[in-house]
Image (spheres, rainbow, N blue to C red):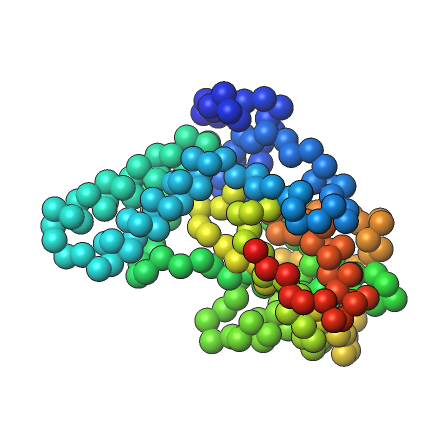
Length: 249
């Protein structure tokens, strides 16, 4: 484990996702945010991580549009600095981030994560992720050639065995502005859809070995990298009041 800055040394815990382990300060009340609302959901990301991600995006975009060899060397250096900053917060080597960044090309834009909230008898449909053993609503990265609606409906089918119909885009959240842990190397927008269950039955998959319905006051351990309790409660509020406008950061 690499040394951490004093800013992140107090009350630290290890968080691992996609092979990266980071020491982060514990975030009080994540499991009990309840109806506290978005204004109290401060970003959990260290500011150097956010800066590193901005540097990586600048380097990626610069390399895409600049053919001058001297400028390209500078952009490559900026990308290396971004990798060094992220590695300083993880147990992964700098080369791991450099390899990850090298796989990206073109103008750097946020990635899109879709999440589907489907309720039955007041309980929300959830799946347990094989990767971390924790629970979330069905969802994942949007696939190329899928519309956002199609992506959400497909994820529910593949992960839970239920056919659903999207009825509303309830929220578009900037992942970095909410206490998801750990931070990711790339910027992510999270789109939450309300869905009506049409047919099907609970059907586990390789990626989601358990499927169930839960009351909001009796939620299982959450995969906070993917979903937060206040987001689930907000989906319930949208179900109860369909006239609510879409939430967005």
